[in-house]
Length: 623
Ligand SMILES: Cc1cc2nc3c(=O)[nH]c(=O)nc-3n(C[C@H](O)[C@H](O)[C@H](O)COP(=O)(O)OP(=O)(O)OC[C@H]3O[C@@H](n4cnc5c(N)ncnc54)[C@H](O)[C@@H]3O)c2cc1C
Ligand SMILES: *[C@@H]1O[C@H](CO)[C@@H](O)[C@H](O)[C@H]1NC(C)=O
Ligand SMILES: *[C@@H]1O[C@H](CO)[C@@H](O)[C@H](O)[C@H]1NC(C)=O
Ligand SMILES: *[C@@H]1O[C@H](CO)[C@@H](O)[C@H](O)[C@H]1NC(C)=O
Ligand SMILES: *[C@@H]1O[C@H](CO)[C@@H](O)[C@H](O)[C@H]1NC(C)=O
Image (cartoon, rainbow, N blue to C red; front, side, top):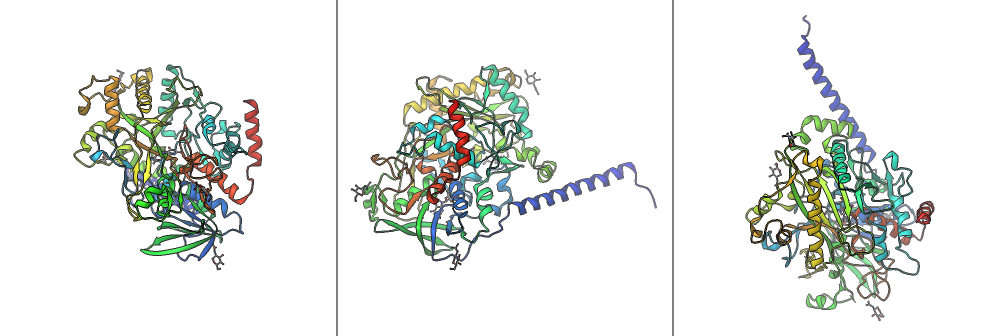
C-alpha cells in the first residue's frame, strides 16, 4: 500500500469537492423543482363547460386563473396556445432569454413594412417578439421592476368610482410585491410577501451598478427609488428575480394553484373564435392536436391573449371595425375600434466599447464553475438578470408640465456589436432577438438601451384574412410622429453624456463611431445623422399596449369600459396589456399584474386589498 502524493490527494479531493458541489447542486435543484412543481398537471380531458374560460396563459392570464380559482365555488379553464415553461429548465435562468424569434416559444411575427422606421431590415419589416408559452412574456422580459409614474394614471379614463386612479391601483401594486431588499422592506411604497419578488442587483453586477451610480452623481443626478415618491431620476435597480430564478406568472402564480380541483389548464390550445350568441359570449372554439373543439362559459369568457392575440381574436369573432370585417366576409357582431390606438415603445441599442472587459463573457458565464455555482447557490453570472446594471427614467421634454419620465436608459453588460450586425442584416439573416441580447465573447464593452416611454405615434392591428392561423397585420407605425424622433435624439445625447464621466472614462468607454454607411450623406453626429440612424436601426421593444383600450361610456375610441367589459357584448372581458389606454412610464409587467389582480377582485365582487389601502392612504396623505 502506498500513500497518495500531495498532488494526487489534491486531485482526488478536488474531484470529491466538485462531485459534492455537483451533488448538492442536483439536490437543491431537485428541491427547487419540488417547491415550484405542479402539484397538479395540465389537463388533457376538458369539461364541456366552465364558469370562466380564460384565453391566454401569459403574464396576466396566469394571475387571473390563480386568483379566480381561490374561490372553490368557481370553475375555471385556462387555454394557452404555447407549451409548458417547465419543458426547458433554462427558461428560469435570469441571464438566459429563451426567446428566439420564430422558435417554439415565439409567434414569429413581423411588422408591416414601416414607412418611417426599420429601414435597415429586409423589406423594412421589423421582427416583433410575442411570447407563446405558459407564462407568456413574463418569461422573455428583461426582469426590470418598474411600475411607472403615478402621473400615468391621470390619463386613464375616470369613472364615477375612480376605478383606475393612482390611489385605487397602488394597493394592487403593493399586493403582488415581495420586496426582498432589507432596507426597502419598511418603505410605504413597498410591501413584502406578495408573489412578485423584487430584488436588488445580482452580486455579479454590483460593482458595475456602483460605477453607474457614481457616473450619475457626476452628472448631478441622485439615485432614487423610481417606484417611490418620484419616478424621474436614476433608479435603484430592481429585478423580478429571487434565489437566482426569474419570476414568471406561470411559476409564481399558476403553478401554486394548479392542484386545485376547480382549475383546468390546457396547453397547445389555440383559440380561434369567441362564440357570441345574441350579444352574449357563451364559449370559445379552439384547436388542440389538430382538432377543433368548443367549450362553454357559464359566466364569462376572459381574453388575456395579449396586445396582439386579443384584438386578433375579437376581429376573427366579428367584433371590430365594420368595414374591415365586411371586406373579410366576417359577420359583424359589434362595430368597435378594435386594433386602433396600438402603441409600442421604441428602442435604440447603443453599442459601447471599452478597453477592458466589464461585462458578461460567454466563457465566463457558461463554464462549469459558473454553472455549479448557479445550481448550488443560485448565484453567479447566470443569476444576473439580462446582465443589466443600470436603469434611469428621465424627462427629456422640458415643455411637459407633469414630472413624469418619457425616456428610459438601461445599461446592460451584455455587449453586442450591433451596428456591424445591423449593416449585415440586409444581406444575411441575423435575428433581432439575438441582437437584443446575445451573450457575446471577445467584445469589450456594454450596451445602453434607449427606450421611448410614451410614443406619440399610433399604430394599428388588423387582419388580412379570416384564416385564424395567418399572422395578423401589425403596424406599430414607429417614429411616424416627429416628437418621438426628437425625444429619442435627446436620449441618444443623454446616453452619450454618461460616457464622459470619470468612471466610464477610466475604461475608455466610447460609442461606436464607425460611420453608418446609409447615413453618411449627413454630417456625422448631427441631429439629421442621428435621425437617419434611428429610422434605420430603432426597433420596437416589446412593450406593446392599447390595441383594445378602455374608456368611459361616451369615449368612442374605447373597446372596453372601465370594468374591462367589451362594449355592448355581455359576458366578455379583456384582462391584459391591450386595455392600457396610454403606455406607462416604466416597464409593463407590474402594471399587467396589477390589472389582473384588480380584475379578479372585480369579477369576484370581493375586496382583497383592505390593508394595502390603508398603506396607500398614508402615502397619499403625505402628498
Ligand atoms: C423583449 C422584451 C423585454 C421586456 N422587458 C420587460 C422588463 O424588463 N420588465 C417588464 O416589466 N416588462 C418587460 N416587457 C414587457 C412585459 O413582459 C409584457 O408586456 C407583458 O408580460 C405582456 O403581458 P400580456 O399578458 O399582455 O401578454 P403575454 O404575456 O404576451 O401573454 C399572452 C399569452 O396569450 C397566448 N395567446 C395569444 N393568442 C392566443 C390564442 N389565440 N389562443 C391561446 N393563447 C393565445 C400567448 O401564447 C401568450 O402566452 C418586455 C417585453 C419584451 C418582449
Ligand atoms: C369537471 O367535471 C367534473 C364532472 O362533472 C367535475 O367533478 C369537476 O369539478 C369539473 N372540473 C372543473 C375544473 O370544472
Ligand atoms: C451570438 O454570439 C455567438 C458567440 O459570439 C455567435 O456564435 C452567434 O452567431 C451569435 N448569434 C447571432 C445570431 O448573432
Ligand atoms: C484603459 O484606459 C485607462 C485610461 O486611459 C487606463 O488607465 C487603463 O490602464 C486601461 N486599461 C486597460 C486594461 O488597458
Ligand atoms: C350599443 O348598443 C346600442 C343599442 O343597441 C346602440 O345604440 C349603440 O350604438 C351600441 N354601441 C356600440 C359601441 O356598438
